Length: 222
Image (cartoon, rainbow, N blue to C red; front, top):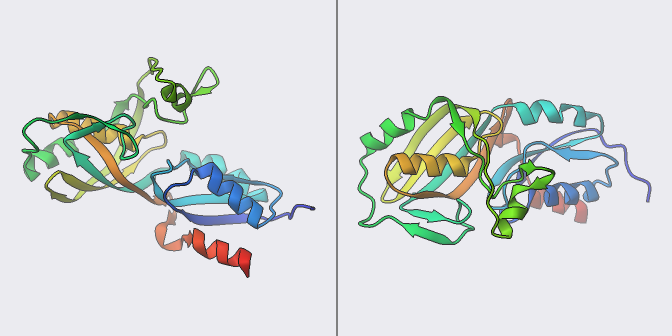
């Protein structure tokens, strides 16, 4: 079947439980598009804004990938997992429970604003010598990773209840939210992991402009 010369950007609301590449391939198949690419990988656990660029619009992919992004994250303190998020196995638990005040939390959060260094996690798509780190991690292999500079533009505390914190984070490209949460937890003298993660903006694109995946599937059926 001859492919369609589709052009433009579709702002997909990526559902939970699917990789960004899998979502891209499904969308590309539905529209029978000749050329398409996505802007900024989201983990299977994560939901939210995943721009799909078609045809001539694929020229904007590097710009969008380099753009700042905003996330809403719910993190759980007191537990460390193998992956840094809720998909991994719990490997460490803070003894005695969580004893952190809101004032202490706000002070620690403010210390992460601006340019900071971050070591990419093993469970990531970052490639070293041509191999994605997550493939090595799945084999139980861990290698040294060089820290790199990232910028946290905004780190807003929405709520804090029990062991759960709800944050809105605006950050530069290359920021790993799971690593940021682990580092915040360590500074609070505990552990932490990402429980829920949703991307709500990429530069000028906002979540209120997104199209749910289910709507696109309805288009295919119709």
